[in-house]
Length: 517
Ligand code: TAP
Image: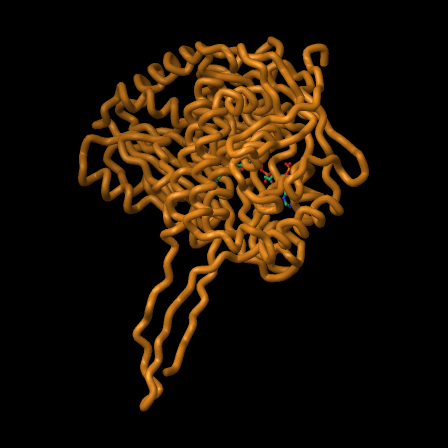
């Protein structure tokens, strides 16, 4: 592109650490943005084994940002060898847990120092609204690295009173050990945050990693790799391969030297990942998959707040949000009035350039996804839905699809069970007096990622929260996740938690040692 000029530079970190690569330099968002555009293997930025490349596209303009190596099976194998060497013989395993924590903390600090660049990249590559990217995509990523940095020297086993082999005595203790080489595969909706949720816990536990970001959004992972060098994370501990899921992702799940896969993505691909993990070498696996999360609004709710939060629950990050409220159930007695307010609120979202500070709603992530949203609305309408607002691609440059509200979604409608993963609110009504029935309908889904309820009645809210089959339930709020709280689904939304202390379990094995004396 005309404003891309490529130069070789040394970017200096603290303590004399430096990272050399061939950067893309852009003048954008009032800054000079420098970032790597090669994959990261064994501490170096490198091309693919066969020299092939692909382009990543800016969804706000549909123009290419830069080209990147299209990773091959040989590249994955090389990355796994580097991770295995780093795990078995590298400095990483010899260093104390406290030192490991210090380096991860330093990495979080560097991410903080470079947060404007990271957020700008997320905006260019994923269409994330810049102000949101600063706070959420990047802000929560920094938080999760800090949080897990603190766990490194607090991972402890137990001493256990077992029966003695009399006349001798026995001492039994457990060690919590890292698993080895871990493969991480993540989607495109929150590229850096999905990387961070998994990789921070994975590295805090002492593993080494090969990560495959989504092919449509690889850039923040590579900028992150640069920062990891400056933070003193040794070569081979973090490797990032840029390529397709069907080739690179599949090789990772099938690789005999990878011992664990952490996957976030669709339920369909999650099932093939699990199968491949089982068939290759019984890899441990955790899966964060799709969702169709119900949100129930009772007539006694704080309605002003409920309108704002219901829109946020669906339209946050242009609906590209795994816990997006996929179905909104509104009590019949308030339905029509509430829908009117929802429509007003949806229309108030400022749509535009994601780098513009006043924009609230940016472009969808990539073209195939946008096309699916158009088709989704058509299918819902075919099944009887009414479009209250939105529903069509906007006629302007970029991949824009407005906040959309569909009403009249009965239980047989396609939109009652299918995830859209976009800014499409699917509204159904329920009988004010029949809580059992709305709970049955809310739970009548194969997903179980999240759910929400709005009511002023405390005991009703607790009874409903208890009855909803979902890994996270929000009461009188939505979207409020935290790095210290475990997050993950039930049923076909997968298993294995991200975040919170529980996430460490996904990346540790327990060894029992029994001593006789
Ligand atoms: P997927 O198509 O499942 O892709 C996810 C990742 O898997 C991508 O990196 C993809 O690579 C890779 N992949 C594709 N085929 C593979 C294979 N055969 N073996 C190994 N890896 C493979 O999902 P998506 O469309 O990117 O993301 C949307 C889905 O993710 C939604 O269902 C959403 O709900 C879910 N999601 C869930 C959560 C949580 S926390 N539960 C969070 C975010 C998103 P390429 O696409 O690069 O080829």
